[in-house]
Image (tube, one colour):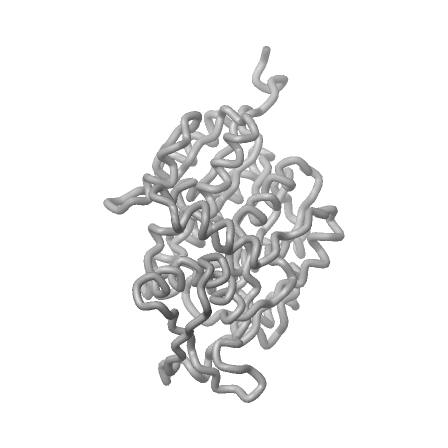
Length: 337
């Protein structure tokens, strides 16, 4: 059968050994997908363990991706571009732009050229201090009002702007495209992130080591100590959105991936203590002075566009997600999915 008449089955996941990427790869394997290509770098840490239980994947470095796409374009069902330098403390802006901006732009152009489906990871960090709200409007006027607070967020915002300019100019786009503004994702396979892990494993470790997690004091009268909020979303829900997009090839757009309900750091700690069957004990610490004037006290995804597009699965309740994470992974001898 000629390539043009074959059914494309290859799914490419850049950053497929990372936190969200490895959970997506696990879900694809569970669904029976047999042609999944992980594009990633591993280095000398334990990130490889995120894929140690996968048996039906191919792995390649980013340097060979463009050639693979060109040679196997008729076989590609979709590209999930999740690879990036995601640490918010990285200060080598040239390195961030090379990985987060130029690679994204190159993949978008390939997806346009070969009429491929392309889903990419943006970030809620693009909303900056939240002063402009959390509306996933992909128009140039809306995006131009956002002011990211660090190089990582800026690099993600730059690519959102590139997509918006393309749409505004009426240029060709990939056969399907979707940008996902992930909020505070937590769940298994994030251990390699170190200090950039979600607060769930960090607080869990502090509780086991010292009996009490450390939460920041509040410097605003409308928030109690530890009452600062985030939109925490379990990684299984983030993966569910991506799988839904894989099954909905006609859905395009920029979408927030959050629950739409802000919860506090106190809520997180109470959920961990409840799972452990222990009475909450919390140590409140001073926030570094350099952080106090630019600390984000509230994030909450607007999910109207995602729901209007047809995603109707309910999100996991915070307490249920934390309990599952702690019991099945953080408390296990083998914490990997």
